Figure 1 (cartoon, rainbow, N blue to C red):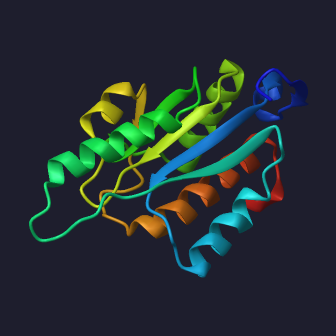
Figure 2 (cartoon, helix red, strand yellow):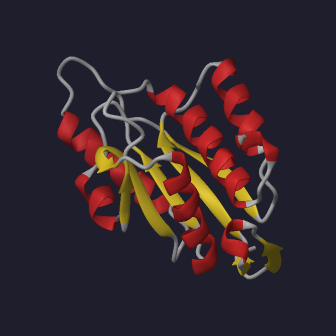
Length: 176
Protein backbone atom coordinates (compact mmCIF):
# COMPACT_ATOMS: atom_id res chain seq x y z
CA UNK A 1 0.00 0.00 0.00
CA UNK A 2 2.86 2.40 0.78
CA UNK A 3 3.89 2.37 -2.88
CA UNK A 4 0.53 3.67 -4.08
CA UNK A 5 0.94 7.33 -5.01
CA UNK A 6 -1.78 9.88 -5.49
CA UNK A 7 -1.85 13.61 -6.04
CA UNK A 8 -3.79 15.90 -3.78
CA UNK A 9 -4.08 19.63 -4.02
CA UNK A 10 -3.75 21.07 -0.56
CA UNK A 11 -4.99 24.59 -0.19
CA UNK A 12 -2.49 25.52 2.49
CA UNK A 13 -0.08 28.07 1.05
CA UNK A 14 -1.50 27.29 -2.42
CA UNK A 15 1.06 24.52 -2.89
CA UNK A 16 0.54 21.25 -4.71
CA UNK A 17 1.96 18.28 -2.85
CA UNK A 18 2.51 14.77 -4.06
CA UNK A 19 1.43 12.58 -1.16
CA UNK A 20 2.15 8.91 -0.70
CA UNK A 21 -0.28 6.62 0.96
CA UNK A 22 0.58 5.30 4.37
CA UNK A 23 -0.77 3.02 6.96
CA UNK A 24 -0.85 4.32 10.51
CA UNK A 25 -0.50 1.42 12.93
CA UNK A 26 -1.78 2.14 16.41
CA UNK A 27 0.08 -0.48 18.42
CA UNK A 28 -1.42 -0.53 21.88
CA UNK A 29 -1.05 -2.74 24.93
CA UNK A 30 -4.46 -4.00 25.96
CA UNK A 31 -7.22 -6.17 24.62
CA UNK A 32 -10.81 -7.07 25.42
CA UNK A 33 -11.93 -3.46 25.43
CA UNK A 34 -15.53 -2.52 26.15
CA UNK A 35 -17.79 -2.19 23.11
CA UNK A 36 -17.97 1.58 23.40
CA UNK A 37 -14.18 1.79 22.96
CA UNK A 38 -14.19 -0.26 19.76
CA UNK A 39 -17.21 1.66 18.49
CA UNK A 40 -15.56 5.04 19.17
CA UNK A 41 -12.27 3.98 17.59
CA UNK A 42 -14.03 2.47 14.55
CA UNK A 43 -16.09 5.61 14.00
CA UNK A 44 -12.99 7.71 13.27
CA UNK A 45 -10.82 5.00 11.69
CA UNK A 46 -13.48 4.28 9.04
CA UNK A 47 -13.65 7.96 8.06
CA UNK A 48 -10.04 7.96 6.89
CA UNK A 49 -9.41 7.12 3.23
CA UNK A 50 -7.49 3.98 2.36
CA UNK A 51 -4.50 6.18 1.45
CA UNK A 52 -4.26 7.02 5.15
CA UNK A 53 -5.52 3.83 6.78
CA UNK A 54 -5.54 3.59 10.58
CA UNK A 55 -5.00 0.03 11.82
CA UNK A 56 -5.22 -1.07 15.44
CA UNK A 57 -2.78 -3.74 16.58
CA UNK A 58 -3.55 -4.91 20.09
CA UNK A 59 -0.74 -6.29 22.22
CA UNK A 60 -1.82 -8.71 24.93
CA UNK A 61 -0.92 -7.30 28.33
CA UNK A 62 1.22 -9.35 30.69
CA UNK A 63 -0.49 -10.95 33.67
CA UNK A 64 -0.23 -8.73 36.71
CA UNK A 65 -0.68 -9.79 40.29
CA UNK A 66 0.47 -8.56 43.67
CA UNK A 67 3.84 -10.35 43.39
CA UNK A 68 4.39 -9.76 39.65
CA UNK A 69 7.75 -8.78 38.23
CA UNK A 70 6.48 -5.55 36.62
CA UNK A 71 9.82 -4.73 34.98
CA UNK A 72 9.81 -8.13 33.23
CA UNK A 73 6.15 -7.71 32.19
CA UNK A 74 6.80 -4.27 30.66
CA UNK A 75 9.91 -5.58 28.88
CA UNK A 76 7.93 -8.50 27.39
CA UNK A 77 5.10 -6.17 26.32
CA UNK A 78 7.74 -4.01 24.64
CA UNK A 79 9.15 -7.01 22.79
CA UNK A 80 5.66 -7.86 21.47
CA UNK A 81 5.14 -4.22 20.44
CA UNK A 82 8.44 -4.13 18.56
CA UNK A 83 7.52 -7.36 16.75
CA UNK A 84 4.23 -5.72 15.61
CA UNK A 85 5.94 -2.70 14.00
CA UNK A 86 5.94 -2.97 10.20
CA UNK A 87 9.42 -3.09 8.72
CA UNK A 88 10.71 0.38 7.88
CA UNK A 89 7.93 2.17 9.78
CA UNK A 90 8.46 5.59 11.32
CA UNK A 91 7.99 4.96 15.05
CA UNK A 92 6.26 7.51 17.29
CA UNK A 93 5.66 6.84 20.98
CA UNK A 94 2.71 8.28 22.83
CA UNK A 95 4.20 9.26 26.15
CA UNK A 96 3.63 12.03 28.69
CA UNK A 97 7.19 13.40 28.33
CA UNK A 98 6.72 13.60 24.54
CA UNK A 99 6.05 16.73 22.48
CA UNK A 100 2.61 18.20 23.19
CA UNK A 101 1.39 18.90 19.65
CA UNK A 102 -1.54 21.15 18.92
CA UNK A 103 -3.94 19.75 16.33
CA UNK A 104 -2.43 21.95 13.56
CA UNK A 105 1.05 20.72 14.59
CA UNK A 106 -0.20 17.13 14.36
CA UNK A 107 -1.52 17.94 10.88
CA UNK A 108 1.94 19.20 9.90
CA UNK A 109 3.54 16.05 11.34
CA UNK A 110 1.04 13.98 9.37
CA UNK A 111 1.87 15.91 6.20
CA UNK A 112 5.56 15.22 6.81
CA UNK A 113 4.79 11.52 7.39
CA UNK A 114 2.76 11.35 4.16
CA UNK A 115 5.52 13.04 2.20
CA UNK A 116 8.04 10.62 3.72
CA UNK A 117 6.15 7.70 2.22
CA UNK A 118 6.69 5.43 5.22
CA UNK A 119 4.16 3.59 7.31
CA UNK A 120 3.76 4.94 10.81
CA UNK A 121 3.73 3.04 14.09
CA UNK A 122 2.17 4.85 17.06
CA UNK A 123 3.08 3.03 20.28
CA UNK A 124 0.89 3.13 23.39
CA UNK A 125 2.20 1.28 26.45
CA UNK A 126 0.38 -0.52 29.21
CA UNK A 127 -0.41 0.64 32.77
CA UNK A 128 3.27 1.13 33.62
CA UNK A 129 4.08 2.80 30.32
CA UNK A 130 6.36 1.87 27.46
CA UNK A 131 9.35 -0.45 27.58
CA UNK A 132 12.74 1.20 27.23
CA UNK A 133 13.35 -0.71 23.98
CA UNK A 134 10.18 0.80 22.49
CA UNK A 135 11.22 4.31 23.56
CA UNK A 136 14.66 3.82 22.03
CA UNK A 137 13.15 2.69 18.72
CA UNK A 138 11.09 5.90 18.43
CA UNK A 139 12.05 8.74 16.12
CA UNK A 140 9.45 11.02 17.74
CA UNK A 141 7.43 11.11 20.93
CA UNK A 142 3.97 12.68 21.15
CA UNK A 143 2.25 13.65 24.38
CA UNK A 144 -1.54 13.83 24.23
CA UNK A 145 -1.60 15.77 27.48
CA UNK A 146 0.11 16.19 30.81
CA UNK A 147 -2.90 14.35 32.15
CA UNK A 148 -2.93 10.56 32.32
CA UNK A 149 -5.79 9.07 30.29
CA UNK A 150 -7.27 5.61 30.61
CA UNK A 151 -5.70 3.50 27.87
CA UNK A 152 -9.05 2.62 26.27
CA UNK A 153 -9.81 6.33 25.88
CA UNK A 154 -6.40 6.99 24.29
CA UNK A 155 -7.40 4.83 21.31
CA UNK A 156 -10.44 6.97 20.64
CA UNK A 157 -8.58 10.26 21.16
CA UNK A 158 -5.78 9.23 18.80
CA UNK A 159 -8.20 8.04 16.12
CA UNK A 160 -10.19 11.28 16.34
CA UNK A 161 -7.09 13.47 16.25
CA UNK A 162 -5.64 11.59 13.27
CA UNK A 163 -8.93 12.10 11.43
CA UNK A 164 -9.01 15.78 12.46
CA UNK A 165 -5.42 16.29 11.23
CA UNK A 166 -6.32 14.61 7.92
CA UNK A 167 -9.36 16.94 7.71
CA UNK A 168 -7.13 19.99 8.15
CA UNK A 169 -4.75 18.81 5.42
CA UNK A 170 -7.62 18.26 3.00
CA UNK A 171 -9.61 21.38 3.87
CA UNK A 172 -12.46 19.14 4.99
CA UNK A 173 -15.27 20.83 6.94
CA UNK A 174 -14.96 18.45 9.95
CA UNK A 175 -12.30 20.62 11.61
CA UNK A 176 -14.18 23.90 11.24
